[in-house]
Image (cartoon, rainbow, N blue to C red; front, side, top):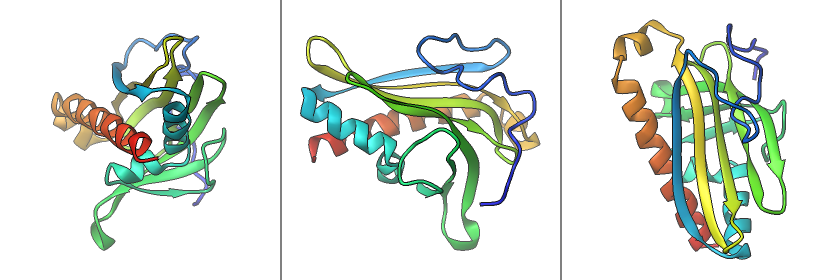
Length: 174
């Protein structure tokens, strides 16, 4: 992957981390999906998220520099086939591999149709329930995403739900 610069005007990396607040001036997205119960489900879901399997299971292709999410790793998430493939560039801005929280966030790079950041986190609650959460902030970075107006947030919510279903399937079929 060629060198690209972070999207202009993007707030400091890591704004989707649980301890931070999402910046103003962007559309915000939070979507939470129940995945299952227990440490085995948590481990399987966390591995699916951080090794790009979640994206692939959802129907996207991932062209990544790393086998798993780590800060600084660049990737392109793509849909379509051959000459009709549409890939968007991103860079992992943070990753968490903890006892009850596993996940990562990527920020958009120049050439992405949106400017922002999106996190994908699996948590294990004290009661044993496992949750997958997508948190994002974004705004249009291209003329066509500006022209799409209110359609873009609908597609983003649809994709977040699709990722949640993918994580649930992958954790169930561990």
